[in-house]
Image (tube, rainbow, N blue to C red; front, side):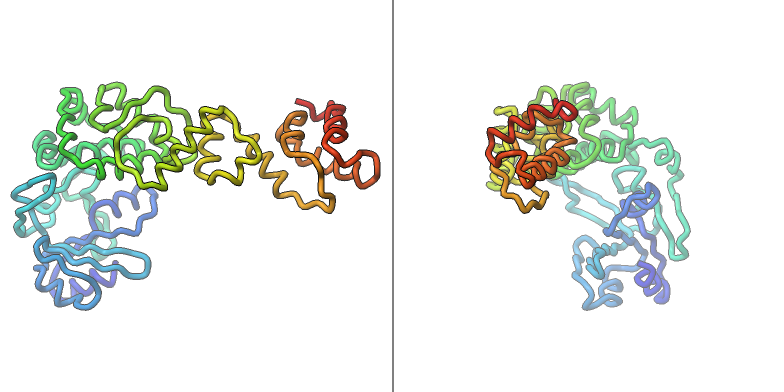
Length: 355
């Protein structure tokens, strides 16, 4: 980052790190995607960094991937015309501040200069401090230009734990989210995955319910229970959004286990971690799964002729490991016969660990 900015400076150009990387840095979130904007023309950028990345002259952009980071270097620009939620006509502008005015939300307009100094050219640091999602400029105009910004506003509010500002709320309340019908299902799915893999799931469904906009996200739902990851959420909603064959299989298996309302020991190897952990959390039987795992991880010289279900039938989840060792010692000392009936009879007598 510093090296790229120094190269631009040494050749007579200014530059700033801008956008999501700066926002995330200020929020204490790790990011590896770095946007750098500069007053250098794209022809100069290509010349200075030739061989290190790929140029996109139409967008005045140059992309570099190095050492686990991605760098997008762009000339200061403004967007003159949009079509299908993308800018189709751009032109250069002269200053960093002009470049910022084309951006979506105020929390994405902060910069860091070559000397690692924070720059708030639009004077909007208060929005970050107050944890507010606010559009740069006119909300309605920006959302009409690019409908995906509606989804991004809600996604940022949910994943960052921010609030939507009054203008965005007014836009949503006026039911103008019908514009989302012009956003591809693939894009919706991608953005919803980010929300469902965050701590903002409850906030998201509260927003959908409060403003009655679920149908514009291609979702129908009732109660959404806590999950392990995004697949647990997808298993609790009805949607026509696209999934791969593997994803469909994960989701349908979670739904099958939820319908059965339990997870048996033999299903631990039958289903993937995504299925088991999501179903366990939704059914609130995570302790049972942990007990299964504790038993599986035990190494014994005795090949015990009793299923884990026998232990869980009589013993509290957090005492299964101790009970297992007790049975193991009993078998080795000849006090318990190594068969399921004798082991179950012994477990039934242990009142200290009984359910």
